[in-house]
Image (cartoon, rainbow, N blue to C red):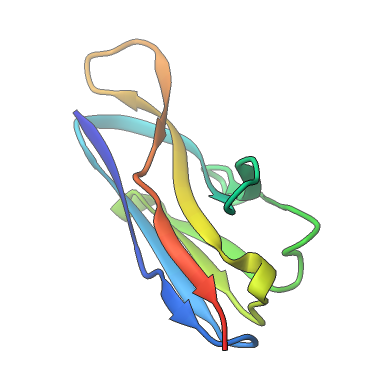
Length: 121
């Protein structure tokens, strides 16, 4: 079994910062792309940022210059540093990863359970 577990969410005032973490655990052979998505109430889930195994990144226009995605391949962990947070960043944030399980010859796509981020004064 494989699990993606997010941490670091919570309530923050506008202009504040939060750092999300997502650790992948279980019988993992290799991890490829890792990313963060978010879903606000009444809206579709959207990509926030993605990072390749080699460290190449891509961001949604709405978070460019404010959010930074990074990863620690030795720890199977991806991070999202969120600065200058705005009320419109309020959402449930989901971790996502493409990975291969040990003994399974195909890649699969996995999701975390989601973590709430609320930006409000």
